[in-house]
Image 1 (cartoon, rainbow, N blue to C red):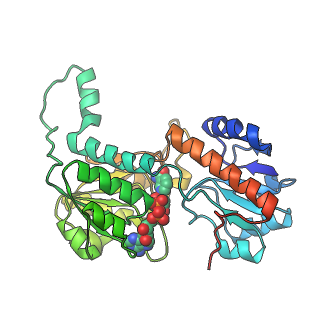
Image 2 (cartoon, rainbow, N blue to C red):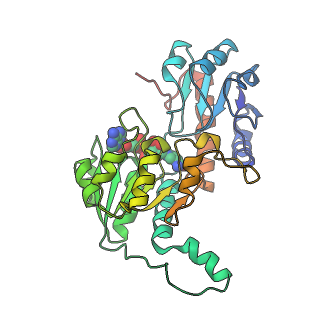
Image 3 (cartoon, helix red, strand yellow):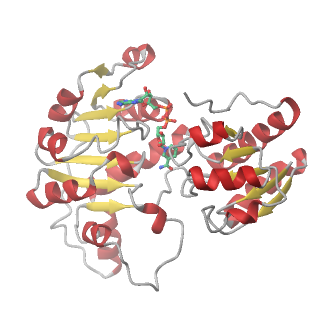
Length: 331
Ligand code: NAI
């Protein structure tokens, strides 16, 4: 198939070109994000291959249909950026990568916890400047602490297992509790109880209408005072101005974000020479107890290879059969 590959980065090309040597698709790599301005670049292609900050609203999908595009191949697990109704209406199939490396994301969440707790980000710069003072670097033992996992799917399960390995008590909330997670020693409880009891809360559920701003002024007030909050899932799960207030009051003791609600304007680009226009994001950067990474939790060699393989297998399967086991069917 002919693929218009939007939001292409050099790291994508390596993994995709390697695997495509076996698949033989024609890939046009495009640096542009897919949106209403750039949709015309899909002309002459059967498929658009897209990432998390490409815009696939109804107008863009109508535009793709007018160009004869038959397939949207998402290089991600999450698909909250794709209007499935519009795709269905236009008879464009949507496929995704339901799992590549849950370890990549779970391990990144743990990296954020360890960094925020033991302040290794501050120690790194301090020691390089010859400052060996320990004031301000005090952490706590993870052993014996209570961890709340919101969403115990593929990533949440790996995360829970790692935290059990640290000797933590792990509580979980999920709309669909999983027996094998219980078997691991995790205790499912109502959301309010998980928030109230946990020293660290980590979000691993998808962004849906039901989960939009699930962390808000109300739920933040239910958390254990001074608890740490980690979000490696989707920015829209957290009401950022509310979390800023909670950081100011000390209700949230530390915050680790790999995702941000308005990240489409920022992440994956080098904006270091530009003036930051997002005042909410700028305020977050002023807190010493906030750690932000730019949607890099997935970013491991194994995950990139997995994404390339599943995406191109999805495209091949669709080309041969008109369907795919990784098709998102919507409602
Ligand atoms: P998954 O589909 O395996 O698991 C999601 C879990 O959330 C399921 O157990 C589901 O029952 C649960 N859930 C659904 N609605 C819920 C609700 N209202 N409250 C509590 N739990 C609810 O998904 P997976 O693979 O574990 O990924 C989780 C999320 O991680 C994805 O949706 C995606 O947004 C994010 N992600 C982030 C990446 C990054 O680089 N930062 C990379 C990959 C995924």
